[in-house]
Length: 130
Image (cartoon, rainbow, N blue to C red; front, side, top):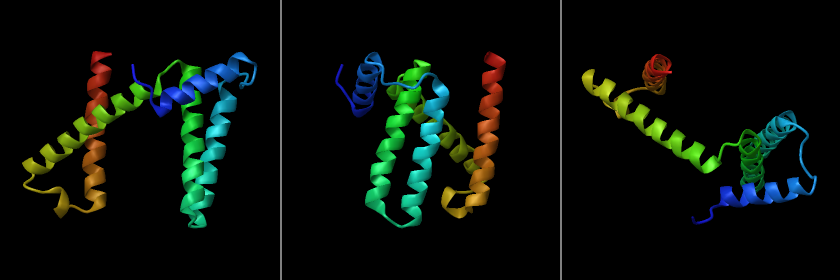
């Protein structure tokens, strides 16, 4: 299986964890994610794209660590999210088609309302199956 950056993060974190360099529980990871997100926000507020790029890398690294704590491979989680997004977006397009509308003709607020409706319907479908 070819390595990707997420796998590299996972492997690095697993290696240093085995040496004792790790959070005692998931709350430390969640705090680190919040910290890194704050640093992304700060970089963007200063319009410093290079700094934001570094902080985004730190944020993603921390998110992979969360996955490691939860035993959820990030590549799989992102793949599932991609498929869910694609399905929901197709459903949005279908709803708009039935309304004789196009995405381009809708405001962001209208699109968001349709998105939330589609998401709600999909979540209700999952509850019925679960």
